[in-house]
Length: 322
Image 1 (cartoon, one colour):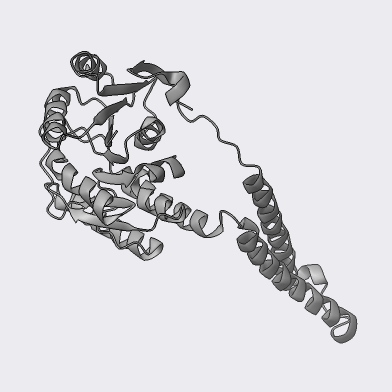
Image 2 (cartoon, one colour):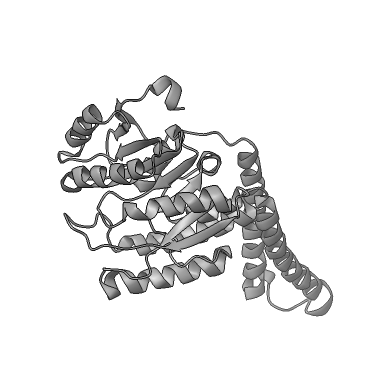
């Protein structure tokens, strides 16, 4: 199979038929063998019924339906598990991504040997203060932190080698940082392509302003994980040892001062240095233990199921879902 298209969605009933026809026309025009994987992230409208109808007329349509809304990252993760195409393409279901960009992105993967091609919505049809400005700040911080020179980390339109999506684990809200996850997994041939962004035709955005706060918090998380996930003791142990040493030196100073210099002065417990020493040694010990426990957890990491599936279409759960 040439291409797997993974499309997460939430309450996009109005756009699904048009999106399906648009994608199919592009796949057939290039004579690709393909599968179109819809992941219904707990929609409450007619989305699933429309997908069922599409699957009856097009056997290339496959689908997963979650029992409730788990988020875009979990939807992508489920789609990646079952994707069989040599190239895996992701896009949003709201018609703001243009399927006509897909063939060129596939060509960049196949002929230029890129691991990942990310879309760049250079011209956006969104509110400047509500979306564009926060997005620019977010992408600037992501570039500085990750070292990946992309202008638009969060663009839904991306193309990957199949082995890339099998190697990464998209969890929480880490869909914004898939290029960083790919780089951390050793797939560093990453580039971008300017893509056409279209104004939303139906419905409304499912993401609120809190996505920017969560995005920056996730950025800190992934920066830390990329640097210390395999060696958390190096971070917590070093910091804990430094803080403990500061406390120990204060305690040593107080002891020498009391025994040999100000033998009749204030009690040690009446001096602020005592509390600095006490707190520093306690915090240093806790940080050191946190590093030790993190090291043990990282060596005994187990994969836990993060979402529950309600229905399948054209899939064998035993073979396709792991």
